[in-house]
Structure formats: structure tokens, C-alpha cells
Length: 460
Image (cartoon, rainbow, N blue to C red; front, top):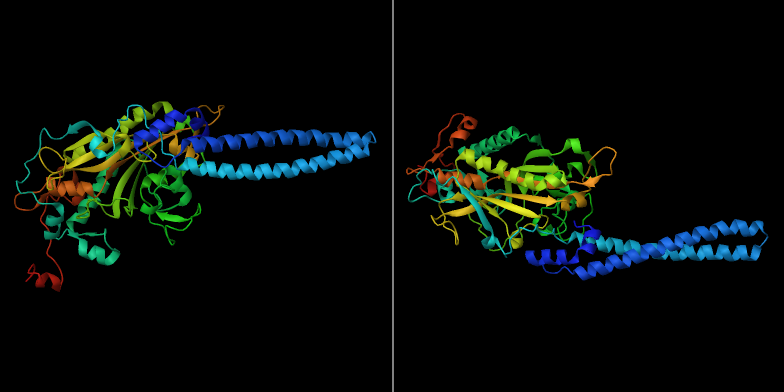
């Protein structure tokens, strides 16, 4: 979150940031007014405490001098001050809570080089990689959902039967492929000096607030045991929407040392999102689903190094796609496409050739975001109480947090199923994944099971 002091001293910067993002419904003047009222009450309270101390010290002095009437007046004034102070403190606490609530709803201020724009169409392409030496893709390359069902690798109907729409089964070699990708990514990031953690899957409300998921994105989360419409407490649980939440909050309300930084963690986790706000987006296939796997990269750094670390984090996520031999591009997000907590974000988008998208690549196909790499500066650190001590004798300061997927599944699976598709309908396993699949070089598919397959003519 933004500090009160920052908003107070830089209201125009906050307004410009909101305008760049296209954010409505936040009145900076109201926040400034609440802050002014709160500070005035705090000042009045301080004056009353000082007067109370002065009056209290006079009571004994007056009694020793035998001035009982004046002493009684001082005692009565002391009680009046107590009553006035209680009223002021109660009102100050109310304003403090309201001010904190308003500040939690204010997004981060974008960095100065974030381009203007409304959505992903206004993002700036930074570079393309892997297109110079591409493999030959079949002229009639088929979408992952068609070839996935034909080869008995994807099962949407049974997934919906078990868990509802937006869930699916990976079967046979597709499940094996996803496990191989997870193992491969973890090893790549270990080579990049990431310390691995295996986080809890449920996370509490305080953790969701710490990274900015609450209160902004309540409708997108899966709450455990309660309706999303009901009020929540700090210890209520939610299914993890991203390991960013759990890993960032590992050190919540702690003080790290400069010797600890930069601290780089990676974490594999399944993730759960309702995608309630994604109306009109693609629902066919596994590009957008309610449960997906991801290897997340989370960095804790000293403020002066965060932008340099952002570039390094992008390169670390890119290495996964480089080794897999998948073509991709990197884009700098415009203000209107940035996440709530980010000050600057790069997206890494892999190329999937089967489905042409509007405003897609010139060669056809589409871009699939597999990593958003963001610098949050001290925005999350303030919400989660993440600090570090530059020197052991110095005061603690807020550190900077960054994160990015390294990378997200299942979109990498989609890209492999389409880009590594062969003319005969099989799928080549990328060379770097073959050791994780027992040397398997090709995915041929599996025979269907059950009477329904016989009725559909897919099994004798």
C-alpha cells in the first residue's frame, strides 16, 4: 500500500498514477481530508495529554499548600480532560480504520517509464525470441483441445463432472508431460540460485491482504467454508491463487538483514482462481481454467537494486522457454493492463500456432501469457510489514518485493502440444524434457476407455 505520508506529500503523483491505470472510484481528496482530520485529532489528543499531566502535577502541590478548593477544581478538570480524550481517541481510531481501508483500495503508482494505454493492445513489445530458427509446424496444425481429446490426453467432460466447469483431467502422457515440466523448471531455477520452498495451499486473509489480493479481488478467490459475500477475518482461509501470496508472507512482520538480501525463493503450487472478472474471455481448452500449476519466483531485495533485479528476473523466466525451444515475446505492460500492486511489469508470452487471435502475430496463431514479472517496490512490504535492516545498528526500512512465474502451466503445455505437433498427429517431446519422461521422444496418445467410447465409434 502507499503510505499516508506519500499520498499527503505527492497527491498529484497519485492522481496521475490512477489516471494512467484508468482507475475510477478513488477520491484522493477524500483520503487527504480523512488524513487531515486524523492528524488534527492526534494533535488535539497530544495537547490534552500534556494539559492532563500539568493538572495532575498541580493537584498534589495545591493540597500541600492547603488549597483544597483549587485542588478539587483541578481534579474535576482532570476528569473532564479524561472524558474529552476518550472521545477524541475513539473518533481518531474510527478515522484511522477508515483511512487504512481507503489506502488498501489505492493501487500502486506506476514507474515513470510505464507507457500509457487501456489494455493489452497498448502494451509495448520489447523483443521476440526463438523465431529465427523455428521447427517446421504442420500446415494444418490442430488446436490443443482437439488433438488433446483425440489422443486421450485431455478430458474436459469428466473434469466438469467431478469438479464443475473450468476443471479438467490431464491423462497419460499429458499428465507425465506436466510433471516433467514442473521438475524441469525447478531444476532450472535451482541453477539460478533460487532456494526452494513448498508452501501451504490454504492462505489466510491477512496473507491475501499483504500481497494485494484482498480486498480488491475477493470475487476471484476460492474461500474455504464461507461465501465470498460474507465479511472475512484475518485468519479465514482461501485456496492459494498463486504461491506469491504464501511465499511473500513467509516473512510478514519480520525484519531481515541486508546480509540476507537478495533473497530468492521458488515454489511449485497448484493455484485456484474463479476468474470471476474475466467475462468474455476464452473458455475452450486449458488456456484459462480454475485450477492450474505454476512454479513461482519471489524476490526480496534492497530498494536500490529492485529495477536491476526486475531485469534479472525476466531473464530467469525466459530461460525456461529458451531451453524448451519455444518462440515467445516480452512486452512492457501499459498502465491500464498492470496489476493492482505492481509498479512495473513485463509479460512473457509464448507463441501457440493453432488458433489465430485478433491482433495476433503476423504469422498467425496467438500469444499466451506464461509469466508476468513485476516489481512491487515497497507496496506489498508495507501491507505485509516486510522490513530489513541495512546495518545492524540502523533503523529497519521497507524492502522491495518482486515476483514472476517461472513459468505458468498449463499454457506451456498448450504451446508444446501445438508447436511440437507433427504431420501424423503425434507430439514431439522437447529434448530437454525427455530425461524427465524416461527418454520418451514422442507422444502418440492412448486408447479410450468405457462403453461411451464404443458408442462413439472410437473403440471396437
